[in-house]
Image (cartoon, rainbow, N blue to C red; front, top):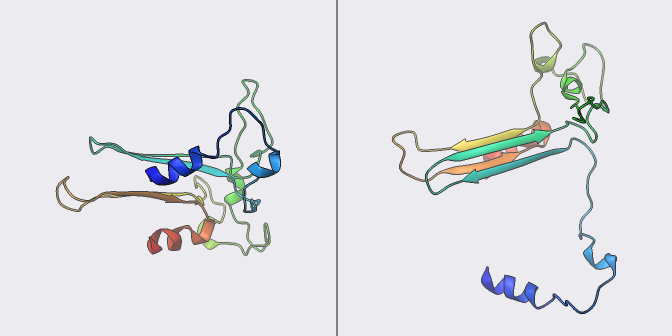
Length: 138
């Protein structure tokens, strides 16, 4: 809101610096799958969901000669009778020829079933098995 922006603006002091402790977020950052999602709704009724993930911090740890860091999507596969990251094997993600593993990302775009007019919704989640239940709760 404009009033919130004004109160934050009052905290800015161009004539002195502050300790970096003031800029530490009041929450902890969990480790685990790393992903970013940008979901944009424009005034022209276009909706874009852009998702980027290395799957784990620093992805696979492999960098191409051009400097692109490769993701570790292969870790999403399950192996029969083996656990990975303390999780049980998922039948949907068992390794098979020509199969892609299910992703932990869930960009979601909702629009009216009839016509293009109406309320639109654009949101995303990236919490593995809990992603769908998180989206449904919205």
